[in-house]
Length: 81
Image (cartoon, rainbow, N blue to C red; front, side, top):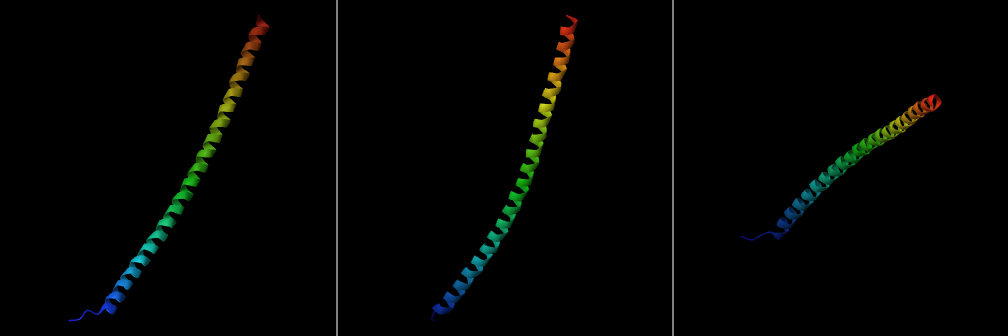
């Protein structure tokens, strides 16, 4: 019984090509999934950025209100004294 090396070569190259194609499809799916993940994370970062801006604005408003209240209290105390 003689081994037909040409047939074995064709079968092996076909298997390698099939594995390569499956790997390429898998990598494409992985890239699509990672791009979606990056887009979602970017949206979350923008939301958090807006939240931190709101907190910063709220902090400034509170500082202004507290300082104006203290000025009113001190002004009344100064006028009485």
